Amino acid sequence: MAFMEKPAAGKVLLDDTAPLTAVIEASQSLHSHTEYIIRVQRGISMENSWQIIRRYSDFDLLNNSLQISALSLPLPPKKLIGNMDREFIAERQKGLQNYLNAITSNHILSNCELVKKFLDPNHYSVNYTEIALQHVSMFFRSEPKWEVVEPLKDIGWRIRKKYFLMKIKNQPKERLALSWADLGPDKYLSDKDLQCAVKLLSSCSHPYIYKVTFAMANESSALVIRPFSEKGTLKDLIYKAKPKDPFLKKYCNPKKIQGLELQQIKMFGRQILEVLKFLHEKGFPYGHLHASNVMMDGDTCRLLDLENSLLGLPSFYRSYFTQFRKINTLESVDVHCFGHLLYEMTYGRPPDSVPVDSFPPAPSTSVVTVLESIISPEAMKNGMPTVSRLLQMPLFSDVLLTNSEKTQFKIPTKLKEALKIAKECIEKRLVEEQKQIHQHRRLTRAQSHYGSEEEKKKRKILARKKSKRSSFESGEEQTMKYSNSNNSAGSGASSPLTSPSSPVPPCTAAVASTIPSPPPPPAAPPPPPNLDVAMQPDLRPVNSTSRGALLSSIQNFQKGGLKKTETCDYSAPRIS
Image (cartoon, rainbow, N blue to C red; front, side):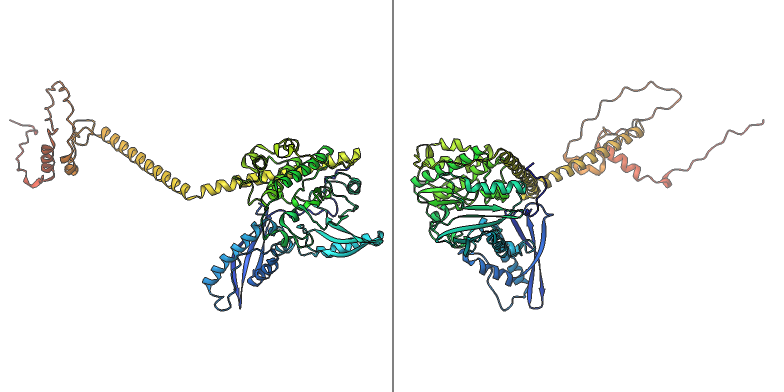
């Protein structure tokens, strides 16, 4: 019914969170400049790759645009003279590769529109701000009471989601924030169910969910209006940032890194876990928890962007949890994202990598205990704890919540069934992607192991051993053949010299003089005498000296030295 197996019209199939990698394959000199041929790949499949050509000036332009992040990026310096030398071009190519590695490995930079347009111009050449303005203008035709004050440029990290500061004409002092977003690759609700679910958000009431003033969706996008908070989000509180500043400026390289106080960590953590538990019990998929999606209202945290999962948008931390096959449900995704958020609240910055092998000193050991249960290597192998289990841990169990606001979020039965099916489809795509990454990692590990220097040495040693064994077996086989032929030819008494039991031949006399020859075999009993045949003398030598003399006598034999004899023929008949 509500579930659509085929992609709906307007659904964006491209996952913007899929990591891009870039490798400079070659360079070519044209007149007064050098072009670099770059192979860009999305995800793990080599089939999903393409070539782009960039000059140094393109890199320089990108780097100037990224200066807003206040990061020190390793772009090679300019050189006006001698920049066409072959050695210089090779050295610069290495430097530009290091630069590409730096921006593609940075989680925030790799997801920003500037880098995406540089590496993938075919998919990111559209001006999404203009598209958003067109949709918002069409909305204002039917809802004339709203008015745009100014665009909130780049305050979020999503490329296909834009923000505007709004006001109501008859309430000019009240400020609201409008967000517009495309539909994403995980959109599995039908258009009718999507519109119903999005409209339902404005009726949701919970002490830890940020209020939605207005929400609507169509077949290609959705817009949501909320009150604008001058205090900003939890991430703004941690980084001491201004809410209206661009995302890169606020969070890439904060001037001062400092975590929150222990009491704040306990209170905010408990509030966030309570709202996650509420959504899980309602069967409402979320999967988009991070510090920028938690609005601050005094000392109260309120969750933002519940519409993201309905629209099928990918999660901010997707590139992290796709690496671990135990994180295969939206509930476990929420817990994993909570681990990132708790780390950021504790240390004032996100973890360098996940899983985290060792944790820096924290305000309390109970904080580290919770972190170890979520983002440690053991947790990745064993699976995520449930939200209920986290609420029972000492860090949160003794927190008293004083907010008495009533909760209200009624989801019709048919829509609840549609949400359940959509959730299963989102999880299915996640599991399939994790399986592909796992297989690719195993293959890469095997190839790396096979190509390692240690493995190459092992293969060389084995090859030598095999070669020696083959040579030995071949020589042994030749010896056996030679021995068998000698035995068959010299089985009589006329060829005792080539018998295997004979002493060492003369050609090995030098060796035989140092190695004692084996004792001669016992003499065989003499055959019975034959009176008709003369007895043959025993030609077997007693030792190597007599044998050598015998062979020398045979070799020096000359036919001319024989005496002439006269033969008397008595065979003719005699006549007397």
